[in-house]
Length: 194
Image 1 (spheres, helix red, strand yellow):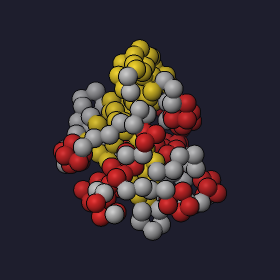
Image 2 (cartoon, helix red, strand yellow):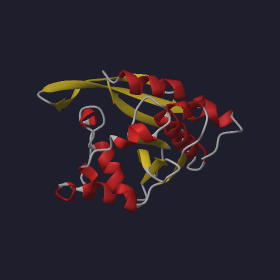
Image 3 (tube, one colour):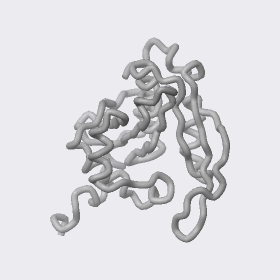
């Protein structure tokens, strides 16, 4: 039966058991730039039902186009086994304004520190390697978990886009958030690496 379901739609529940919640404060995941072969795992994370109204998703063609664009960058967080446990997409790397959008960040198992490490590492790379001045994103107003993570890394709320997205028969508001290069705390942390 599993052969009839596209690989990216197969459940990832097994990852909950594979991730040690205790490592959130200790061991480090490998965070690297994504490649085309990572798209199946990225799309599998996007397909988590709870993420439909919180994160969104793209088709494989949209991902392939973005991943091959010089204006975009993808990062993945992997377990020691190599299995992808989260991803982040940045858009607008070639803007003259040095203001880049985090289009999407998602993890297979929330609440164990993977998203915070991934976000912090990606922001560090955007500010140091890409010389960005500002990193911004939008987040659903009711996504308290994500907002907490963004605040913990230094993001501030810039404003509200009232009822900007229509999903599941209702309008949803988005909060705009950003962090500037001078506000990003981990830049001064000598132990932080990308």
